[in-house]
Image (cartoon, rainbow, N blue to C red; front, side, top):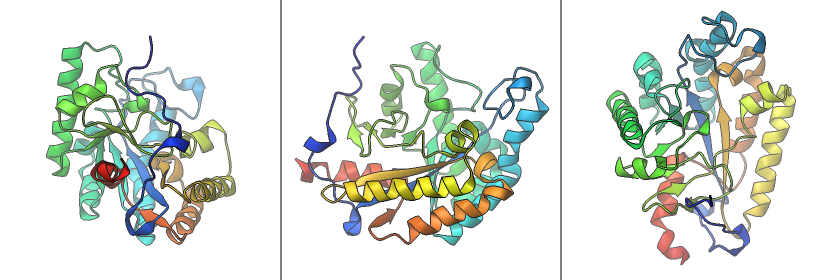
Length: 289
């Protein structure tokens, strides 16, 4: 079947986007705060035990994130005045209230990221998915004090109904379709797609490709340099996707700090959140016609 969620739109044929303050690149950190069930396989560093239940090796590797890695990561975000856009599993919000409290103190944006990273809604019926999404969104609102405006599916998963059901719940954008450097409207009233990077992403770079810390810094710098050049006539979006159990390791910490320092001190960069990017794009839509 043909894709009915969005059509083809070459970036060379769109009205220009102007970010606040004359910025050329809107930058946000996509911080994944997740919970994993102990008896189901998920993202792993060693495939040999990934099918076991329990799997202390891989579960423990992931569980380092909320216990230790997140707090090291917060130090870097604070140092460089970066507010996180948090991809929050609703189970994580309930189970790790100290993280939510730290985020509320820092005015983080909260993006609904499913119940946990062990359950996908791919095989749910419409009614099952509606109930699932309602529970996720309502739980995050209860725990954070703010109703989420955006959605990132666990492992970037959706059904063909997901954006429509999210719109019914009052959400305004999704991050699952990583096919652009600018936001764009979906063929669902009131819904946008906001860029989210699969490759400038610590899991892809460190776990998927086994790159080093200096490699990570160079990739971040190169990504920003190209987007800045591209944005001479129309603004671009850059996301940096982080998982505390990966980037929060002691031997990687200084490289995240170096990357954030480069971005935070680069001219023409708007340090923002995915919420604010979506809001600005939607609010200024009439100016671009």
